[in-house]
Image (cartoon, rainbow, N blue to C red):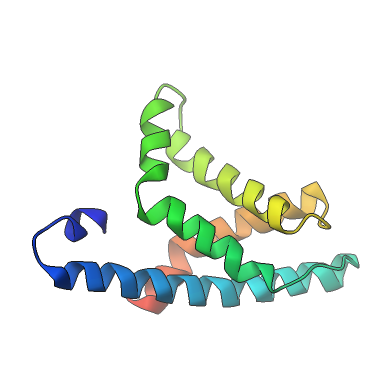
Length: 126
């Protein structure tokens, strides 16, 4: 996406902005649903309003090249392209949902990482 936005046309920047906003909204809604399911199942009290902020921060990391920069520095580690995004999701979920147990944050992070790969792009039409 960022390669498209670095071209000379303003239409690509508009497309990047629309995709950024849509993926934040759709991802936030999905994360609210997942966090609510986990909080009711395990009896934890979490604030679902933080879901949109988690997805916004993750989109900032993913859309604007921070993740690619980190992966290039850690390229000697096998499967870093998969491990690093999962770790970022787990850390973000634990940071914004501090009341959630670490195991539950890890499960939600992995589940949401899988959803960001398969569900969100198909919903917003990448």
